[in-house]
Image (tube, rainbow, N blue to C red):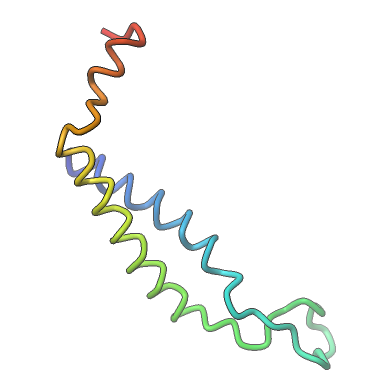
Length: 85
């Protein structure tokens, strides 16, 4: 896996994990402030969610990197079997 591919995979994994982490602990206020959406979270804790996302994405990316580097599953051989040059 090259540098650009590795970064690209990490960015995609990071965004997928972020969307999984965003709903954690979200509670709407009992009495929303005027002008605010009723469903706006009371305490979004977005920095904590970014930190958790970064750590989880790093672990997932390391797993993907290890799988690609180990040749346990040969993606090049799979592509040849599909008719790719």
